Image (cartoon, rainbow, N blue to C red; front, side, top):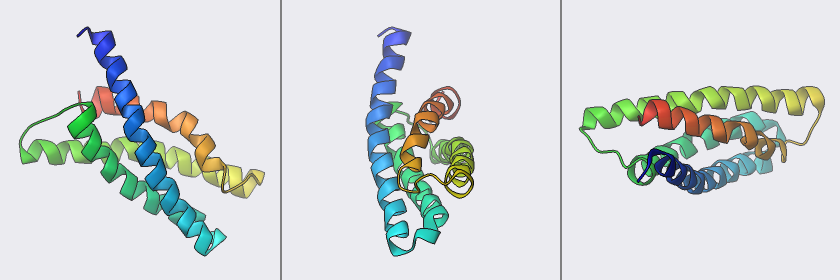
Length: 131
């Protein structure tokens, strides 16, 4: 398979995995704001931690099909959390700005922010975490 086709296939698979990550993250987030609207940042944190673990598992097994020693797996897990951590910090800053400063909806903003974070996560995972 050519490099371009392989990258396209990985991007599509990454998108499929991303749907489950997004669902997990948003479910956790919405549970927190259902309990108390003021917990939206804590819900975002909890959703992120759980969804990144999900992302690592499926990206490692399905998208990039990595194998290796336990040490390699833990190294990639660390890189996964760092990669997603960078975009998570950006999404937290965006969420805080959108909700607390601009006054936008705490329900809709996390979904809008995905337009920025998903492409960044793919690039970081493909070219750094799982290269």
